[in-house]
Image (cartoon, rainbow, N blue to C red):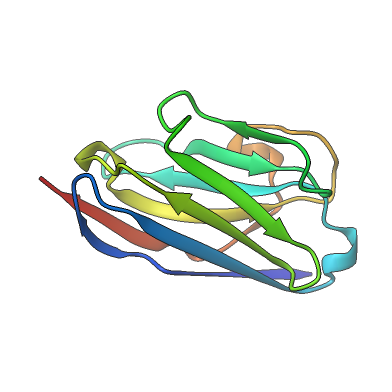
Length: 124
């Protein structure tokens, strides 16, 4: 089993920045892809950004491309999400996800492990 714990959420004004972190524990040696998803009230959970095991490959949703950056530290078993130029539309619960299969996949059902989520609220 793998446990994921997010941190770093909070309240920020539009145009501001926030950095989320996700710490993985347990059987992390077999984790390949990790990433971030988000779910706004009344909406389905959606892909934000994902990163390969090596950290060399990333993929972002069009809505965050150029503003958000995913990074990974395998020595610490952590991934981060740096969010810049935040917009009220980015308000959501952000979830860390991980899976044992390789490949940059963007569907929620492709990920086996999930964190509990952290709230990000962007005010105008």
